[in-house]
Length: 391
Image (cartoon, rainbow, N blue to C red; front, top):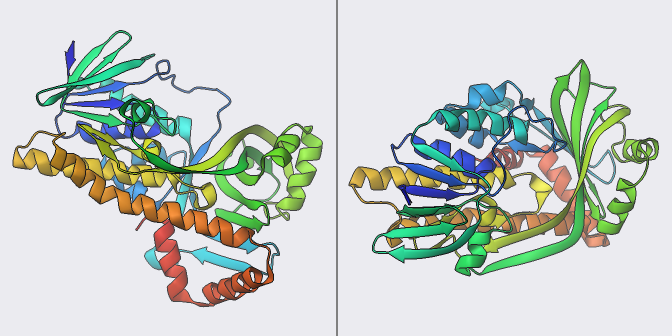
């Protein structure tokens, strides 16, 4: 039997960031991860990247890891949004704030940095290959029982992803939407310098985004996130490299020059969900266990990091007041500070996806007029780039 103040379920990007963020408050923390122990400098095929907003970057600075993450992050200085044709263009940059629009980094490299800090901290205990069997309550504690552990804590934080086992166990209800589409995620090298520009092409079956990555071995690298009909992407995924490259060259309109080589590719189903509430008794949900959104705006991880920031803020306040974490007022306060933000992004990404895919003439003219208006209006552009940056 182990006692901890805070028990975090899930040791992925959000769970690990939560543990690191809360460690400065002096709590004893346990992390239950269902996978094996974190491998450093892992050469596995998972080349997924995340877009880090300026808001998330500021929080990573605050918890002391941004300088290390920054070493392998590529800044986004410009975003070009293209609707069907290159002349339907909206251009964003962020010279007025003298900061970048975001950064692109590999998931596994961020995890390396965070785990390096977690492993050094004697107040954080990480258990791997865990399976949770049930949860019970006794007075002011929540007891999490599993395959080889029993953890008593004041608060459970569920950071166990989209298919959260905690959500099933506690029967938390949620809204969900299946887009019946997939995203093809690729990393590739190309002939032209991307000049720190991200592109988003809107096609009638879904968006294709090109995200600038850090140069490796003198090669220009980027990643593509392409949303389309599942059957179509499955057949494309099965093509040989030469044919796949020729399709991608057409779709990317040579914006980063010719595609030379594909280093990794993965297919993911696209769906979105939102829990009806972000807490149960002595448990709060963070990141994908609480919400997931359409990848059209690339803001999923930043939304999760906003949850992490709110947990820190509410815990800090309760500690100052001398109240233990996990009370019902604590859980409700966390919910009130996070739910609306997630609801808004869930709705916004869903509507954006609908507007950009709609082929009727009215939608087309609305988009053309709208994109022209945004391109000409400094105020609108600034508002959109601030939103994208997490301000």
